[in-house]
Length: 487
Ligand SMILES: [Mn+2]
Image (cartoon, rainbow, N blue to C red; front, top):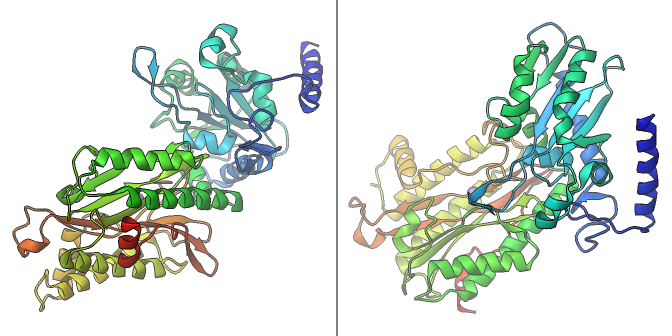
């Protein structure tokens, strides 16, 4: 009875919302409140309700297809907690970033929530229900923190089948146990992303031993996230374009005496001015010898005339990341030695991009990179002319201690659980980022090479016919780089 009243109210409310009779705010941008960001039918900018629904469907299909080592299991329940709010000090939150798998499957942007996908006991094996548990609406809290979507808002926004207050999670799970004889639980219990929900509700649910199998979800979700849909490719393209334009502006803004922190501010500004929500990671902005510290993020030194500056930065646009590195002469002209090394890295990088096809894996292209790099080091004269293949590869590892690249997507180091031995497939995006690093303390090379660090990184979409460089707007050839810095 209560339920039918609630459903009737819900329908009335939806009708009013559709006809714009009442103003309703959500806990995240929606087409009604942010028409400049979302179109009707989208849950997050650029991604439709139908696509989110399809993602959940595909995940459940993957679950049904997985052979569990024990006897066949009729029912499945998959749990995806959101991220929680975290604080830098009393009452002062860090910027919130949603848990990626949760966002990929629900599009819901509030903390302290959970998405549950479960088969329906007694129903045919390929039907399931998607249920969101969300923070309860609370006028006092909303006065401080802004509106929450609440249960009605969550269903309207995301198109899940049902929504409940997060406090009802425990009871819902108990009811599911009661109604279901045998079921498997799918949940990333090894590294719970929401400690409070895990400790208060989920850990206890898991130890009740009512389920017949327990599996983690991250491999299944990452396998889906690995291949980008056309809508995702469009967002990746735009994220890469924004970052490329920002790099152009930072190059133009560079001059001898500039502080790395000022270039940081500039790249952040230029990305946000083009609608990116934030930088995808703390950027590396390293003048001179500091470029040899791979994860240098202090970004607080003066860059002097004649030095190179290495910038590794990217932005996040509506949940999709870009990741670019360029190295340029802060004075607008490479020295002869700087250009020699730069052209060596560029030749390796361009050769590696050509290898980004369905014939190769990231590891295959990594070995290609080491081979090419070894030859370049020999040509330049950094290693002896009579070096054999083994010593060339060893030298390449020494001058470039990192891998060729990684998968890119919603996360910067996207789908990290997927092996780099996987052959590339259309719809994957990878980074290609070889470098040569020669710390000032390196005594085995001539003095003029010391203290130079160079990396060139592009984002590459794998296509049916080969590959597309999504960051091609960012200057890369040494003449173009010099012209950009001088302009
Ligand atoms: Mn990268």
